[in-house]
Length: 193
Image (cartoon, rainbow, N blue to C red; front, side, top):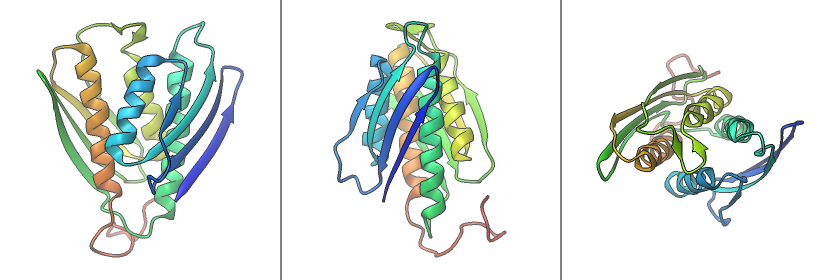
């Protein structure tokens, strides 16, 4: 399945496609180089091809672009989940990135909640403000209606810290979205909303 969305505000213009068949090439252009790199890693490790073209007010800073991308990706993920007839629901993954270690636990719960426990070694990676990592994940998790716990267990190089988080999130999501051995909604309530 493929999902497409456009979103335009006075701050950003976003065109995004998620291809869950992974038959497409990933192509990402956000105007924020470090974010392009992290989203490319997300695409590879989640197994979801991502086409993303963004024009944003990066002359101000990278905040609106980063947050709005999270919103759009979250909305697309929510569409995909609603179309699935069977999925595992829970996913946990640890990623070591040399000296760093990150853990992400995801529940496709229908109840949006983010627990973000990461203190980065530096405030910037290149020109990218590291505080925007939490803003991105908060926007994505709320709009996808996920419960997600992100923990940076061991730190070191700031680039490695953030990369480990993106990879661990992608892998935990891949597990949570994978087809379950039981059919139907993976909830004793019979519904996830």
